[in-house]
Image (cartoon, rainbow, N blue to C red; front, side, top):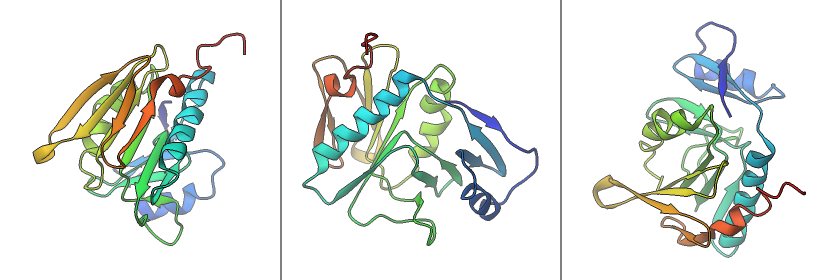
Length: 193
């Protein structure tokens, strides 16, 4: 999904949150600008559903919660407010304010790549996500072919990449669980559905 600028003016974070909570569609906020989020393809939506289902099933006996793409995440160090395609928090969730709709301490963030968002998801967004102290796993999922890229925070804060393909398993380090790639892509490329 891509983001398009909204009304050209400088917003405060508080103005954005008050306004955003009244909107029927989602918007990102960064450095005083508000950006409308674009729509998603069939493949993108199926991937998000499959990912959140897999995360829920893998974490059902752990003190973790899985959120779909309507859970806003704030990057405290940069002030970015964004909507990852899926997020996981383990332990007590921390929120921006009493609204309980802006997560501050995700353990896992997942983005489904699209032509319009791939560069941002790999670059500036990941750069900002890395500043979240609680984040241990960042997962990028291709919607064009079967490929999951898993970035894991390693020793000393370095990020280690694993590419996982069909038949493989993504081993999330933070919540200590695995996601089957074949389940993530269930029915995604089935054009007869």
